[in-house]
Length: 226
Image (cartoon, rainbow, N blue to C red; front, top):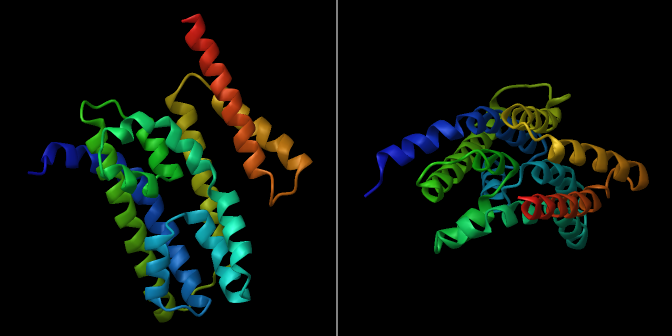
């Protein structure tokens, strides 16, 4: 039987994600419709791909008919950070049985940020429902945006900036919720250095690898000192 308290807690935790996902997914659905794709195409991409930033990049890729190899490499580079995210919750996911596969598939920047703040007794259950609610928000926003795109004439100039705005909000939220700003500062500095060394299309993966190694070393040092 579903625990109403757990579901209520998960819903409250997912409200910030809802506020962002509905608008961003709406923008995505709108852009997909303006690119000439039916609402169900946008829906199924959101259902199976479910990675906001890459979905926006995917739109011009689909209209320009790029190769599958290009799609695969771009997807790997843009979404490799989820691999590092999952390492944080590897023990939590193991406890969730078959649900762990769903958790791995639905782990996003936003759910990761929320999961890092959870300290409830039923953390694994709350994490599951946060992921479930978040995916529902994204799918719903996608459908509404796609339908609206066929009914309302809207100027799309600058609408793709909403994804950047979301990342900025997540960064600010994490900054205010913790006193340890080493991860945030190291991420910004390393990303900037890699951006100067590599191109804007290739800096993400080396940045993530370097930052992850740096954080692992720092955590090991803290554990040893503790």
